[in-house]
Image 1: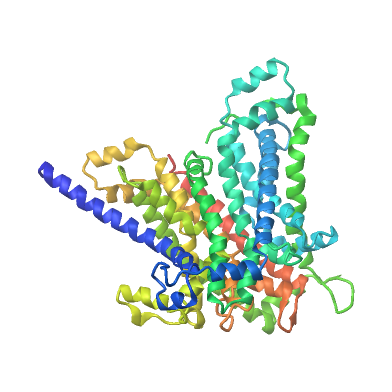
Image 2: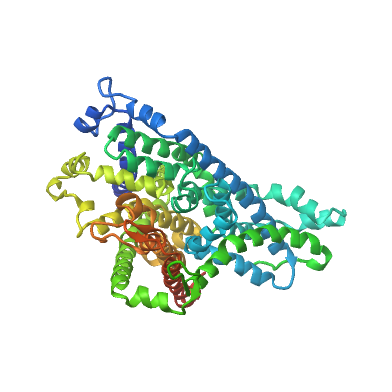
Length: 282
Length: 312
């Protein structure tokens, strides 16, 4: 085979590879794209030319005006944001503390405790919902964001502890030993030396904790379905149930729910993959 | 991974160790482990109308599994859930593996862009995804038919989500569309971890990239494939949001899209004229727990152990 033959073969193979990848990218993105562009059209535009971009004639923000007037989207966003941020902060702190104790100190039952904390990676917390609802009723926390935060912290901890424990094993021994020789206390070693060191793993853990919480329907539906405590996912679900025939409003509400998470994803996607490929998750 | 075990003896730092472990252990125990165990306990109790909850042994399980009113619904949702899982195993995971294989080809341009774009649906809420596809597949809008027209298959278009025979399969495909990102991400990460010299040696020997993938890379990432499968299993038997968003708690038409998650919700909270029953709800949850546990144990003892032997 001559050199030019090989190159021609390489080129044709590259064309096929890119054709496959482009096709699948289109399959993945076009449905989302379609919803977002139609949210910016008049009702006529949505039905006459669903695949066209909004133009001077079909452009309209009617849907968004309606959604913002008839539903409490700002509040739902605020609720989702609060629940997600508070949960992530608590999960990161408590998981890091537990991971540190599990990876650093030798104590009786340490391995067993590690396994106990790992059960939650495989067993879905939803299966305990009947009892969780009783608990939340007893604590007087129905229709509060606190109830959601407590459940989501419990849900997020197992995987976070697992990932952070793996990560902490990689911290060089000398660092801690040096600190101990200088007489630094155990708490200070953790908060002043270890916590800043785990920053690379934090992004991975944060994304893995955040996505399921932000997107969850089940617990908002069961624990906080009303009283202005709906999260964005539940809010959209309730809104669409009510305005199902109003296409402008439905498309606009979907776009409002899609756009922020896509922006966040585009910002964090690099960290997410880096965390995965660095062997944090096996 | 071979770690050196924990290093420091805890007796020098009892208080810090307890303080580090307590918050996570307490919240996790109170809001996860206790509710799971308590749900199982509740499944052995029943509340007669107006009375106190009383221990009834396995009565609730007998009701769900053998009472004609309940057992048909239960087994219907179980088999629907199996079909839902089968579609994910046969379509989602092979597509994820194939795309991960292509993305890990050497000297591929725009690798990161493709990967970021293809994983995007996975980041969206299941509820949002359900509504997106409900709109696209709606005969009222007709955009689904227009899209099929582009590839000349317009005649195939029908109200798939509304028909008893096709609703479950259609919902399974919607779910596959969303979750392909999981096998894609995890297997891609595993493929990247394969040392280059292994692959290079085969290429020098004249193997094609496809042969290298099939005979060298794929066998090496089988443990990850097994892990993806068990994650799929747990996720599928715990699914609820998609069916609830698109079809409601009744999982129509005529319960043809009912899966364990929607059955659990209806039993627990009630629907239309039937009142919710926490004890029967807890029984359905316990049965789901048993199914998931069986899957996880099968994975741990039958699959992972066997695969681990061939790991590098």
